[in-house]
Image (cartoon, rainbow, N blue to C red):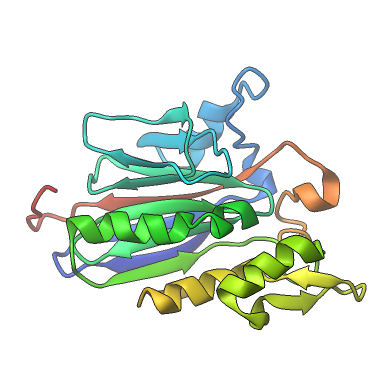
Length: 237
């Protein structure tokens, strides 16, 4: 069943919660013509207003005011101040990452190596900073780890130039591999974002999760996050 990754009460008393689904929770891929049970799967995790993206491995960030929804539109990150929305990112090896700003801004980001290289995480952090200068923290969901992520040397060289040699590792089979999480940790350190939780599980190793690298699957697990108002006032952004 879905695992709770994070739960925290903000300084205003409101609550932030984040979950990640497992295979037994069903497929959360956005292609509803193929996955007719998507809404049923979503409602079992949370009955609120779900917002999700087509996820293009690009740098498009969708800001959601209370009157805006995202139901499979193009983009790779969602952000909101609203407590009326469930943010969702689907993955089968890429890294889902939650950014939490102290006044209650949330952003869920879909990070594959292309999005990392193109600066999606930095762009998402900067968007939040245009709205607030309060401290920010991150929650890192499960992804394919360096133990399984064999990676081409040409693309690796470009990433090493940006994020340093710590991102280079070795698979269990002895091949050169990329640590997506080490790339992300370096970005978060450079942007002064505290990591509140870093899920240790590898989607390629762990049978609870779908893995594209392992199976070529088109099915997806989902990481979701939402804010619950607890009766103490908030200021709308």
